[in-house]
Length: 450
Ligand code: NDP
Ligand code: 2IT
Image (cartoon, rainbow, N blue to C red; front, side, top):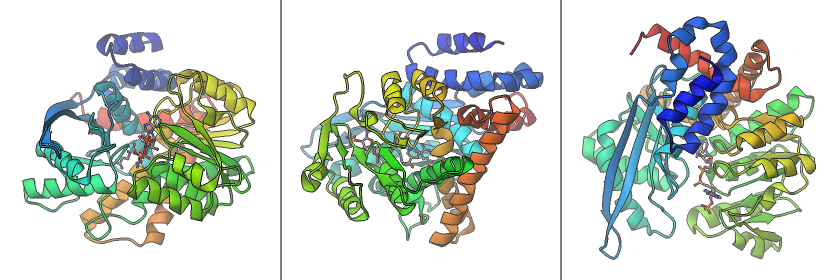
């Protein structure tokens, strides 16, 4: 089948799922040369099979808020592909969560997890529950109700969820407690657990650190490094915080952070001390980023979600690291990045750049790393957490960090090699899609038509 025939078919089957179709379109275009070289993959309809979730679970979540009012949310788990290992991927709690969003995330997760070299299949889940403005007690009540249903569908050898937007250490704790109570077993059914009850050192830092390790590999590949580079970072959550930390540690200068309301531009550079304030503000007080601008007297730019472009991507810099959410860089933003001299765009978020945006940066010679390669450090370290749980012992901080550094280099090198082999030298997007696809395709081929 041609690119457009496969894509048309996916469109017909998933008519109201723009995010899923966007993720699918990018991968289909990248892997066509593989299907041409391996007609057996095409005959077995491996790509078509990968585009269909093995299982999609949707359930009602009912809970009582602090006023005693009944609240009704929707919960989901998309079990996308288990060819190379148990389903693995995060849970997202955000009002924008829909089956389309979770299917795009689960689909990308399959390729990302394959790239890590750790045997993990792909999945994603979550709810339209909005943790913003909720008390700890309400978040706990919701997590317990959510796990009340999810528990029957997951397990440490079956499906191992973790965090994503709106799900951090607090939520994983409540979810784990609920699972343990329901199933009466202590297993590594979730990752991102606390240190002291099954968690791995470095898991909290891993996505952000891994992103900057990946970018460092890209820069070193062209004889440069992070040192001295001015960097734009979006978001102010888990991924952003540790991306900023690693940029500082490698001698770069991070000058922005944001939340859904606005952007702070700190021309002097975010220091470790300012970053501690940001972590306290976001993780403990759960406040808004404007407080940072007020405290450190720097520029604050409001974000208007309906505006043509995001002011964050219209600032002079060398590198850009989107770490907030999907489609935060559109074609106009991509044009602004190019205009402002940005030479490297590496994605911490999942699918933060639209297809038009990607084409613009690639056409203008910007080095571009897709999230499924550059943000894979988080799930890779989740894989290391699973391994430690299975072994029943723990690695040190240095051991886990060294493994993370090695995995990011491997993903970098594998993506570049696959891109070259299939005729798109230097194109990390093509390379990551191809390398991830081949790994999963071979496993599916060996396991028969199921
Ligand atoms: P957090 O919930 O910790 O932080 C999310 C950040 O993004 C917040 O600053 C939030 O601002 C902002 N944000 C969320 N939605 C929007 C939106 N619609 N518009 C503008 N800003 C928004 O999440 P993470 O840091 O964990 O995740 C960030 C991204 O990284 C996501 O794309 C996620 O899928 C991806 N990722 C996460 C991994 C992980 O290990 N956690 C691993 C790999 C990828 P506000 O507070 O205003 O909502
Ligand atoms: O998008 C992602 O890779 C994550 N949210 C992390 C998933 C995981 O299982 O650690």
